[in-house]
Amino acid sequence: MNTIQKNTIINGDCLEVMPKIPAYSVSMALTDPPYLVGYKDRSGRSIKNDTNDAWLKPAFAEIFRVLAKDSICISFYGWPHIDRFMAAWKSAGFRVIGHLVFPKRYTSTTRHLRYQHECAYVLAKGFPQEPAYPIGDVIDFVYSGNKLHPTEKPLSALLPLVETFSRKGGLVLDPFAGSGTSLHAAKSLGRNYIGIELDANYHKLAVGRLNAL
Image (cartoon, rainbow, N blue to C red):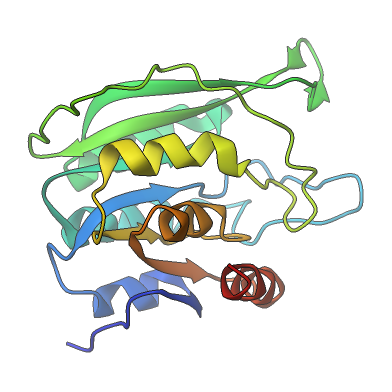
C-alpha cells in the first residue's frame, strides 16, 4: 500500500486517495461533505457530487478504516437527507455520541422557514476518552463571506472542534476539504493534516491558503 505524505492537500477523488492511507493512522476526521441537494450559490458556483450519494457509504467506510482506535469523526450533513447520512455512518461502524448546532447571524435560504443554522454529528470509532474540558454543542457561526468556496465554514467554528478532539502532533483528515478551513484549523493548532479535494479550482485555493500560513 502506498502512503500519503502528511501536511498536504491532494486534488483527487477521496475514494481513490483514502485507500492509500494506512489503517488506524488518523487521529481525527473533520469534514463537510456534499449535502446531496444540488446546491448553487448566487454566483452559480456548485459542488461536485452534490446530486448523488454513490460516494457516501464507501467514503465513510474508508474514514472509519483509517481512523485510530477510539477516535472521533465530525461530519456536517444535509438535513433533508439525514436518513442517508445516518445509514452511511452506522454502516461504516460509527456510533453517534453528540450533535452540534451552529446558529448563523444571517438567513442562508428562505422557503417554509428561514434557514439560520448548520449542523454536524460527532461520531465515535470505538470509545474515545472524554475531553478534559468539553465544549458546548452550540457554536456561533460567523459568516465567512464564502469568498473561496460556496459553503465555506468559518475558521472560528472549527478551531474548538480540532482543539478538543485531536492532540498536538496528531493527524487530522478532511476528505472533502473544499477551501481547506479544517486544515487551516489543524495547522494553526499544531496538528498534522491530510486534505483531499475533488475540484481542481477549490484545491488550488486551499493550497494557496495553507501555504500562506
